[in-house]
Amino acid sequence: MKKEYSIKELEKKANQIRQDIIKLLVAAGSGHSAGPLGMADIFTALYFKVLKHNPKNPGWKDRDRLILSNGHICPVRYAAMAHAGYFPKSWLRTFRSINSKLEGHPSFKKLPALETTSGPLGEGLSQACGFALAAKMDKANYHIWCLLSDGEHQEGMTWEAAMLAAKYRLHNLTVVIDRNNIQIDGFTEDIMPLEPLREKYEAFGWHVMDMNGHDMQEIISTLEEAKAIAEKPVCIIAHTIPGKGVSFMEKDYKWHGVPPGTDIPGEPEKEKQAQIALRELRTLGKKIEAADID
Image 1 (cartoon, helix red, strand yellow):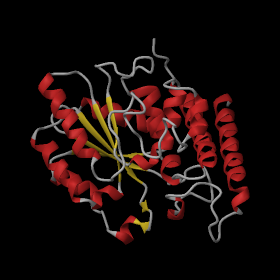
Image 2: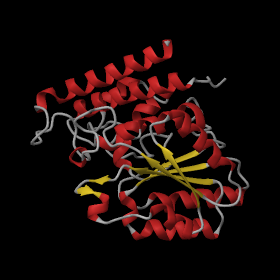
Image 3: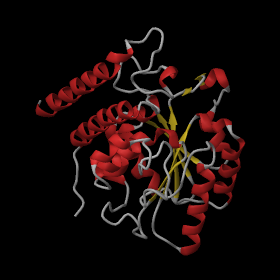
């Protein structure tokens, strides 16, 4: 029987996942920091509250399908899956290692719980549309969740897929956009402006919602509401803070594609970065526990 978690328990779980993200990035010596930390609350809500799935039977035919388009944030997915019981947490320390099942971009050939292999940005929504259209044709009772970065909306293929989803009224499809406003070279609105993002999806025929990507109650209620929309595909614009929980990483695009232990002008000494990050996250965890007691 699926365990029911309280909001405080989910907040603590997200904090533990953030700590594991830091540890696996340090062990690998490479990988992306900002995006995974920013999406920890949403992945926690999905794997521990919203998704219909079974870690003991990852190929269950009635499972919800989770498509991660921006595969470079896979540290958060791996950490969430480990906590959910898909594989031992010890595997996290093998991230990006030779022969590891936890590759730098997820491979469905390595982990049976994955639906796709992601790497090239901009492809995930097209893949998700294929899954959703097939599910409708089969009259299958599962939901398709597609996680996209905001920067991927600078790619034309994303908008072609958005048109298709609206045409076929793929109401079994929900897109969650990580609207953290950064990409590897700077802020999205400086590189290639995306706004008005909400109005664009609405013009393409989608039902659009916004949510605070760090308010656990709001995340869950918004994701659950999305499943109840019966006429259109749903787009959720999740406003997140890249590097959430680590003060020197938050809202700083320089941490988009590098791990703790990177020499960046103006940042803490590289030898101390992981220590500082984990100390701040552990302090945050204690604050969450104290609030729970109060």
